[in-house]
Amino acid sequence: MDIHPCVEPPRPRRLLAFVAVAGVIVAAAVAAILPMSASEAAVACAPAYSGSAVYTGGMQASYAGHNWTAKWWTQYETPSTGGSGVWTDNGSCGDGTGGGGGGTGACNYPNWVAGQFYATGAIVRYTNGLYYQATHDNPGYDPTISTWFWSPYSCGGGGNTGGGGGFVVSEAQFNQMFPSRNSFYTYAGLTDAMTKFPAFATTGSDTVKRQEAAAFLANVSHETGGLVYIDEINTANWPTYCDWSQPYGCPAGQSAYHGRGPIQLSWNFNYKAAGDALGVDLLNHPDLVGTNSSISWQTGLWYWMTGTGAAGTTSHNAMVNGQGFGTTIRAINSIECNGGNPAQMQSRVNLYNQFVGILGVPAGGNLTC
Image 1 (cartoon, rainbow, N blue to C red):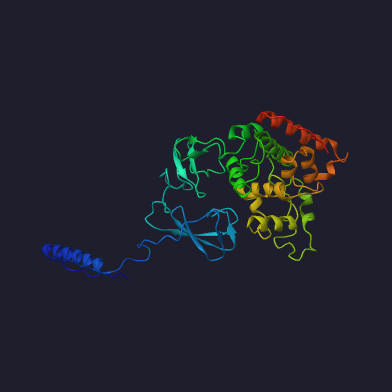
Image 2 (cartoon, rainbow, N blue to C red):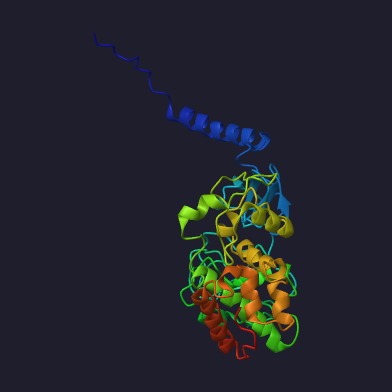
């Protein structure tokens, strides 16, 4: 059955024009008196994220023009939707310019924003408060991870510091030592970690400082195949590093405490001790040693400065007190000593000799164990 629609007679054009104008006026008036919707109103930014602050579940911080909420305890993990997944992105805040302010002191450069294109020469302020200059065009890579694209920048106007804030090993020398290193093991991550251990490579004469730096990096190179491996490559061993006799157990899982990082931190009790010393919950989040460059380097320096193993002294003390490189091997992996594994011991010695050569200092005595 056909149904014919009703046909409305045309209205005069002047009436239609009047109605249209009146509609615009009314709409404008309504818009003037109605408040902005929640989506239109600018959301205030939470306090700016601090790389050294501890955040617990529910705490908020602003970063890169967005507000973020921590799902659980975290520290040193920059807000993002990646990593361990600890942060929830609550959307943009402020005026949309990136939030958090620019530089301070002699510098007034903008905050680094992940995913934003940077041309060669651009200077940014990173979340750790330090400045970095783009050495190659890049789509917003993290300055502390992508050292090919970024270099530390001095706010005194001197450009690239090149020396890691006083570290006796320059970035160029570091790259020479580790030509095939994994990009995770950044020079900036190491120099940032060193702020937690101010005595490292700063004690004694210039020669002793360089010898200690060479000794640490030689052991690290041996442990990681030249800073290539982050996780222990023998996955069959992973479940063996959980000591259930500890009262805190292995909350992250049976296989969660395998070797990671520059010194290959292993066992739940070592993750617990390192985390307690560094103020990071590594017992519950051991993956941070394999995902955060600064934390990873911190665990290596933590053992170097505090671990004694079978040596009866720390590796740091061995180098600054003249006990020699061989004592550091005994402190880190004594099973290689006394004929236990002479090839592995010699590998460390060879690397140490190579690195002191790069740094231009003698190796000293007592190289073996």
